[in-house]
Length: 139
Image (cartoon, rainbow, N blue to C red; front, side, top):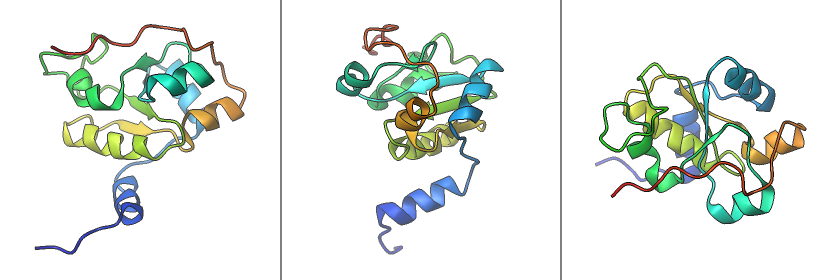
């Protein structure tokens, strides 16, 4: 049995498996067809706003919505080759989420360093919290 791993070490390990992107790189990726996925919970989206065009999928639904072979997938989850940039509030939960997507075979998944707050601080587009509707929950 292996020794327990703390969250800081776990984050370091999962982040070593892929290249993270900064806000400008995420914006460029989206412009080139990448899917931005906002996993923040409703209260943060209401408080801080939304990234126009980002798919809103709360963290507990992410794997079901992005598995291209899943019965509850979002329409945008078209292929294991899909470039996905996961965005949480500050760039921690999104790293674990990106690692989970890698485990599902989404080998081009990454996350935004600094999360939504970095996006907003970079002056990139944000709309009021009542933007696009969240993906409906699976049954």
